[in-house]
Length: 143
Image (cartoon, rainbow, N blue to C red; front, side):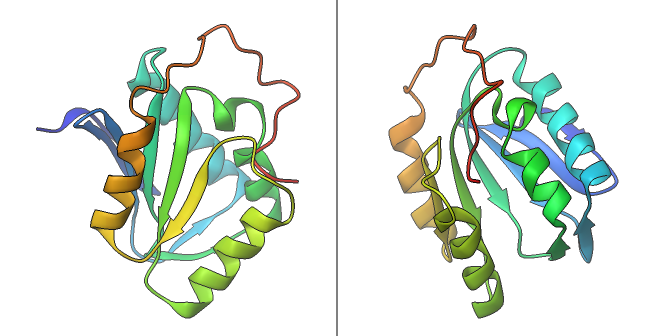
């Protein structure tokens, strides 16, 4: 059952089985403004609780460098225990792996091409409770 459903101009977000799902809408270009809007909605629906995040990026045309930087710092990491990125193209796979290997991630992150694989991997992070007072000011997902 979907809980805490929310929509932005760029993605649909919901919580289901203690996993936060973010499904990007068709032909999405994620700019800094789009990233900030998605992050803001994600923070609202988590209500201060940490969740593993299943992010379906199959509809994304591209993500700007400024958006990537926004998502990997401070608010972009709040209330997240792990990220799984679902992709369906060789280009997406290269981009995700490049994004994740520039520097070791501060949070567990994994690119996957199968939904079941992502959900299975995220199960490991459902109980990974992080103190909600953690300061993310100096934490980055990747450089």
